[in-house]
Length: 111
Length: 114
Image (tube, rainbow over all chains, first blue to last red):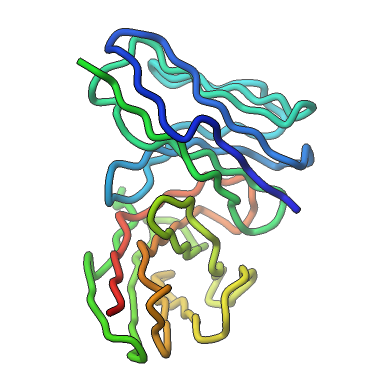
């Protein structure tokens, strides 16, 4: 069964710190992986898309890496800000039409 | 470029009723997917439409059905509503049905079934 796991479920860090969010998946034959941000009760905002042929993608303070052989991806956030507080979701395309999501990591940045 | 829009924002229905949710895809996108997100969970894939045809379906019963129109907008219909159907329903669009394309999500419709 193709599954995506995100640990921890919740994380609190002081403002200004760098942090890493983790995502693991059970099947290394992925097409791509996408990181999303979700604010409470809202839709999903796409942050980064990594194709299976890529090792990482960067956007501003965000950097996402992909290691297919170990079935892992990380989202690195530099110099965290209170506005970064949200739930971060990892979603994997295993080659069919759907995205398979993890349950997310709820991030709180403490001012 | 217009993003993905959904209507209504919130909806309250009674068990056994029927509901229709609407989605307008991002400009230039011909593929629309629908997801259900229960509280505290990740979104679950319901189905996908590509050029007005359903071309993928998740583990949802037939009372969940959909349509895609020539302008690529879409509807999600749910019949015989159950309490467990209460969730955030998300619509996503992408440029084409190929999995390499990035998906863009709308703000969602919050459905409450009482």
